[in-house]
Length: 246
Ligand SMILES: Cc1cc2nc3c(=O)[nH]c(=O)nc-3n(C[C@H](O)[C@H](O)[C@H](O)COP(=O)(O)OP(=O)(O)OC[C@H]3O[C@@H](n4cnc5c(N)ncnc54)[C@H](O)[C@@H]3O)c2cc1C
Image 1 (cartoon, rainbow, N blue to C red):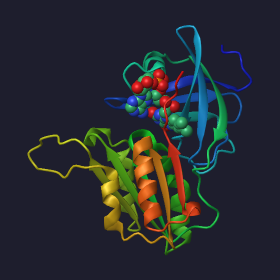
Image 2: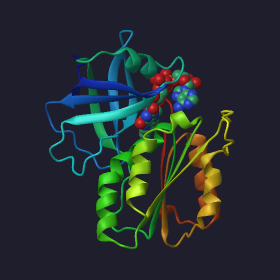
Image 3: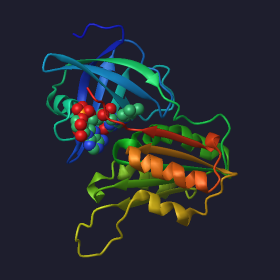
Image 4: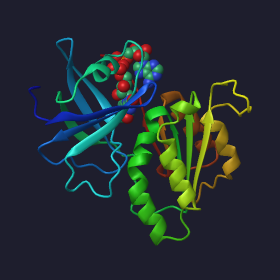
């Protein structure tokens, strides 16, 4: 067991959700509180060394009041300490959580439209927001939500089925995707970076609110584009998945 002042949690479920992404679920004996969109710092021991990395909550439930589980998704990177640890760790192993942290959360008052942009595992916060956003859609008939998701390949569009189902069951939810690599399939599909989908949205800095999460370069480019369009700072929330130097 790790010695710390955080919450000790034990691995209860682990599954690959794409060829390079694993979803892990840890359970604790005390409640794990969070607002959809927040993240936890996860401490683990790798090669006898204490390491810590941040991961967004991917849990999908309306309230965390009686929640004892923390689920997250890790995109594996070559040579990464956490990537190595989480791909080999077994059920029952222990990590220590501290948090929740982060301001990528929903505001009290809805904008007219949410625009949510992500790459890779950066879609995790939006997945955890689905129950709350669905409730808000039901109580506000003008509210619209657009999720823009980018990944290298179609297979790496994490949780795509869930977002497609959500969009199919609600006409005010749109889910648009773009992959950056040409996969040479029989039907030719457009490729590019997710930020290139933004101009098609008729952005309105007065009534849209933007969320941007994932690859730091993508986040910078999207934020720059939104600033140029006149979005006030308060209407753009971001979370960069910076990697640790340790
Ligand atoms: C607030 C916050 C939330 C985060 N949430 C998530 C999340 O939900 N899911 C998730 O997968 N990650 C998330 N991250 C990133 C995560 O904390 C780790 O940095 C990531 O898992 C890599 O850790 P590692 O130990 O495997 O690699 P490291 O040992 O940190 O890095 C090894 C090497 O791999 C390369 N590298 C590392 N990360 C990347 C990358 N993303 N792209 C390209 N090259 C890279 C670098 O060259 C680096 O030197 C988050 C980061 C922050 C700051």
